[in-house]
Image 1: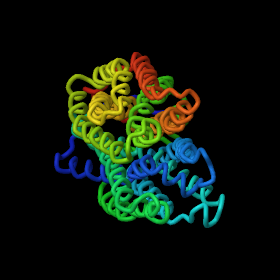
Image 2 (image 1 turned 180 degrees about the vertical axis):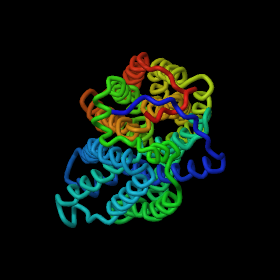
Image 3 (image 1 turned 120 degrees about the vertical axis):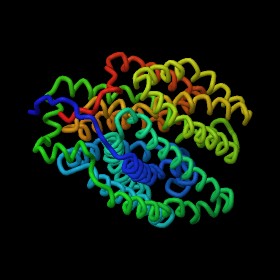
Image 4 (image 1 turned 30 degrees about the vertical axis):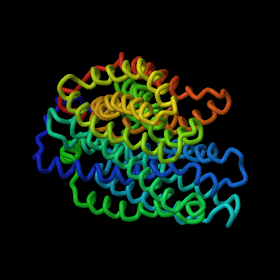
Length: 435
């Protein structure tokens, strides 16, 4: 068992912190690029891999959801190794894995070529992607937070979230541009492959950058002093304080389900298949809202450095609970300007959650178990409430005929996050603990 040590303030050269932040962001961009492709091209992928099914889009989202249940597996293995041998090594490994898996999706034969083996292989590669992202999420945020200058952890880690949304936007724009340029028939024949194959140069760039950076001051200090945990998970589960923190890491991210995975990943499909917007209109609404959240996130991260993580998160959850239904009603009017307004208001509100949630969770754990414990709680939450969200929305709308289901989900998850925040003690203005 570890002994409690006084937190050591982090002294990092600003130039080094910026270079490390770039490395973290490039990796996250490469890791999450696939989500933008998958969300926008769900219809095309359904036609390629499930051509004989009346529920092709639903089956695509089943494959999307399955991968999330392997994120905790990735979190357990990568988190354990990350706390034992270092953050930097694991971040190189996970970006290599997801780049290969995403590129292989672009090389898969279609259902017409090999039958049921095609969707089976697609889901198998999605599982590899889920495993990789499970190791990436906690690893990258831990890496950035442990390198960030004191008093600026919120701002520095928020840039990684900007990268994730810019990645989503890039994947969406590439898929949409190719759909518009090639048309539905050619996209189904060969065009759908190209966005996935672009993961190769993205991955090579990310690997190159991450191989050239050093591990975090917190980890190297513990390693030098012989203070690394021999079994991070045993240590985490044996501590009531850590068990409580893992429960918080499970429930505080509830808003991610209605934010990242519904408002952005599911939105293009929702607008075209349910609300009957054109593909271009759906793209426009999603793209503008992605720009809005990318601009807002750094301000929310910086604000949390000043007023605390909990205050920003509470404000975001209350605002989403109040504005969720009115904003979705604006999207459902069929008017593109009103849909943009509704989506952008929700995007700015959600920025207060997604831009701050990760640094709050990082600060709940000491360096000895941070990668492991934070990754496990967060990725179980993503599996239960995030990756299943597009599938759940598709199913519930089909069963009820109510297009406002996503609005209700937004309110419910916001209230859940708000309740979980009641048990958090803010640590924004304290140094990160090593033990």
